[in-house]
Length: 243
Image 1 (spheres, rainbow, N blue to C red):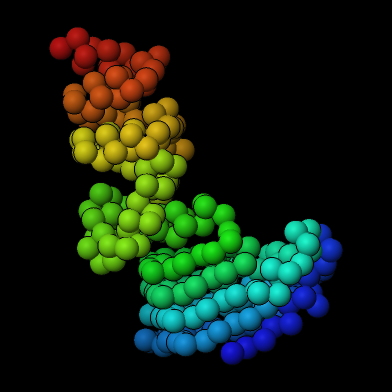
Image 2: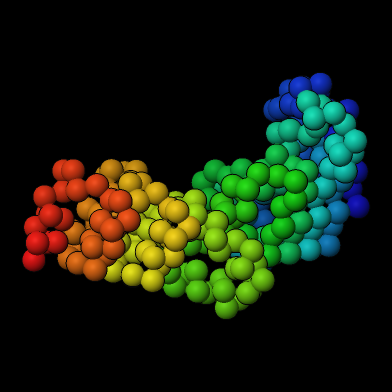
């Protein structure tokens, strides 16, 4: 167990006095070649709990990051700017069986590639942290199924968030992906969970209806129109429906 003495660094607004100066509880830097850190309890971190930088093929497992001292403080004095993991210039890492509690975010990342967060529990934090952890792993419907097969309990906990919030990954989302690739089942589930039928892919500003029409997905065009998709500016969609 590592004690971070976090209360000494949190100010009355719940923010760090000087974010850049706050020490991290643990630093794992420049570890390359199947390195790992396991079975640690980091308590009351002053700032971001674990700094991971310049690592490759690195695993963090069975770690608890918790700021219990924050529980007894007034809301405006609780821990803030205390991400669980600060990940930079790191490739192919696995965070497995980690519990992050009373931290500001699950992780803050820069220059990342192939970072997987599996069996991660985030307590007393924002709903978006749950879905973002899983969104990191998703590129297609197959990836969703892979998560289900690997860990059914985790999948059941987070599955509805993926569709309800139309989680984006690399500019896409479950609904956008299904519209483009003709995956009617995924599209129906997204719509049942009230995903935004007018949401765009961000980079090219294409909506699900446009992607479905552009790729000749007639069933998806019809389904999206039935669920309120606008045909404004989508003459291609109108002509497809008439067919």
